[in-house]
Length: 390
Image (cartoon, rainbow, N blue to C red; front, side, top):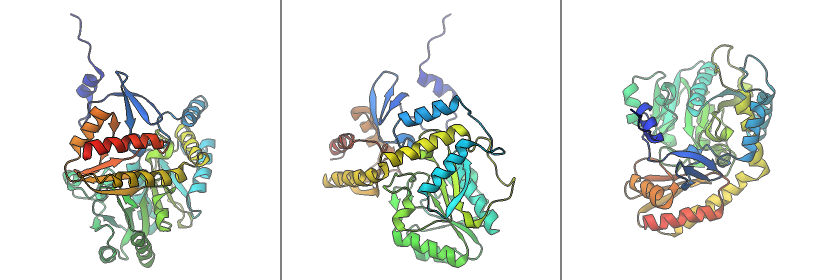
């Protein structure tokens, strides 16, 4: 008996873990801001693969870097020195504040948060952690302890480390929580999964002062916002502060898995053997990251993102859409808070308009397009929003 031919969707559905709610779309190819399904239908990708493809899909510079390095050396653990890792350190120094020059390389955002927590514990000798309500920092156990959403947290309680959650953008709440027992305050400069809420500049400056007063470290989560997404290299730069520790990931290597913990060099190094990552800092990911950061600079994409994002938000706000309560964000990190549920809107955009977007809560539509997106493509998104949400 001839076995029936299974579709790609059926094969995945049979074997998937169940952790991911799936959309009815099989993506098989991408170029720039466009992806295609197995039937050849094109979609305008305003997700960037969750803010990962900063240069769009399969950017020539990233493809060349990966191809060239794959033929040279793919893996090299950090027990040895490596040329691509050294190059990446030098490039990171050029975009981060000069004081931040120590790095631990890993493979994801959640790993970067886990590493940042260990760095804070090791460098301060303290155990207390302060995080924000509505925060999202990842789903591994340490990162999840910082995350506010009870649906993520409660199945895995109780927590280690002990985390106190405070109201975002409320310095009085932070003053009560931060003490001489606090190892670190962990904060997103813009809360992404929590609804795309930017931190007030005075709030981040106040957190900086409170951490200095009490000897705690300020950890800024730039996993979704880093490397130009908000119109500055890093979102904390909008507030003119320098964190003690920065968690990086997502777009750093343009689609190749990579994360990083970066901290102020004057804090010193962590003890040998206190942390590790088999694949962290591998030459392939490092080469891709060097290509991404170099291209962002050479093509002035960070400055362009600030200008283009402001234009797009103004265009959408000017539509005065009846179903939109508020338009907010920075750069090309844009949110539309809706008066109703976002899921039907995402479905309509995908099926009827060929536009892929993201939720950020039950009623927030989130747009994270590649930083290479054109004004014309943004206008296409604007026009579709006008029809769907008016």
